[in-house]
Length: 290
Image 1: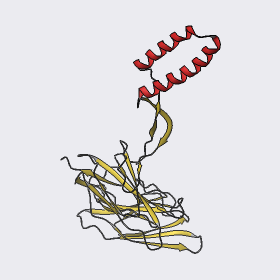
Image 2: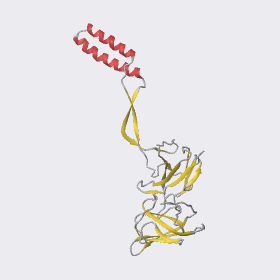
Image 3: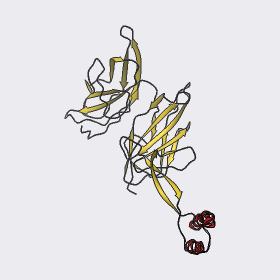
Image 4: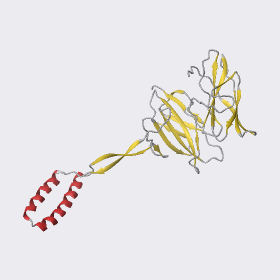
């Protein structure tokens, strides 16, 4: 779906209500009408459980997403099944049918608000400060920031490498072996058994000492994600960086490349119940060429 023009459009009001008869969720929306010329109408997008664009919901009585509501600046989605988080955005279109970019995305429950950089920002510096909104009173959450060039912000896994020592025969060790085995010819059978046991122990000891830190790097199939704790350096894979930020509400990133589009989102996790998560929408920014 082509979105060739941009307007300043933000949902400024979202009201939830419970329909008494069907125990369903109703969402009322309102926004300031666009002052751009030639605006012919608006479309409302919605979706349950995910803020990933495009929003493609289907549960509302008013119809599947998007819903063309004409030139109105308020609208209600009704009959939505309860027990889910719904994400809603609005776009505008002109008389030729060209559609704008999406407005901000709002949620039927609290999710982290992405404050800066602005969604779709261009010519951003390669040192970026990601800022998101604080949780309301009563929420005890820890934030995780995701950013990278993958639109889906998937975290690629990296193999864990284990350095194991190897037995390496150095020249001095090899000379010891030759001398020791030469002495075997002068000993009796019983003495040879005792001598061989002791000799092999010495040879192995000398060999391992001779090789020092030499070792083979063996790759195991176990994996880990690129996660840094507060204060640790960023362990970024080629696509996505993941940072556990505790209760901090910003992060300065120094690893962005010029002339590159990045995606970012924040997931808040309840401290007492890790299964309770609040995921923001995904915003984009593009860095400057220099």
